[in-house]
Length: 310
Image (cartoon, rainbow, N blue to C red):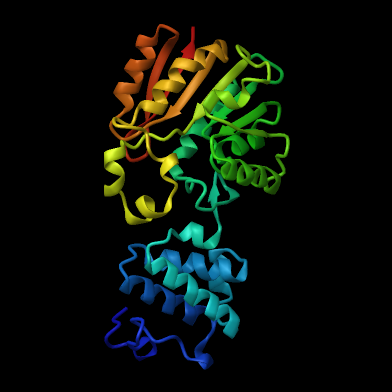
């Protein structure tokens, strides 16, 4: 869209003048939001404007275009303008909307937890693939650093026989994870507050887990400031910071996991873009794991490292 020539979106104090009341249908306000986001440097302005407006009316993006001629109330437009303004300050879109989709399921998100990423679905995929091979009626699964609970809830939804536990050091994260379990009818997933395995140490489950999965903090602390502003400024630092080399939490998990895994049980970790080989070596050198594998994500980045307990 040529903003200099389009009179509907004339320049104003905030970069664009709001759509006139008589033009406020869904299609017009979506185009206004897209133009406004583009002006403040949002890369995927059209997609984000579609998500904002569809969320505004509680519908899918596809339904938005079928309903594009429907009028927009003053209250709805004020809310949309507020969202656009917040996004202009680089607040992440999904924090603004309060939810996102992961594994085709809805999850509430807030600044207490990382926003689930598409590549983390590989952690779920790998975990489910392993559970299908386990000759146990009710396999036990532990999701460390559970955050929003997206991994634990997704595994529980798709493998109903599993008993799934999640832990996080953040009490606010665990509260949100429990809400997400309820949102997706998976209240049987149990979440606990604590530092990694400490959260489940009183449950008499040592040596009993068939599967442990984790998307732990793995960003080197010195690299956090160079991340996208949306991430560095708004997402929880504790969920990002993996220490000086990014491997501090991963090393702790590898060290303590053998005590909680049964023989033949599997540990699956999400890792940073250049950490696959390092983490594979840590697992091999521990003396407790075999069948160490590294899997690339759809961008060709080594993203998932897995190993079996000897």
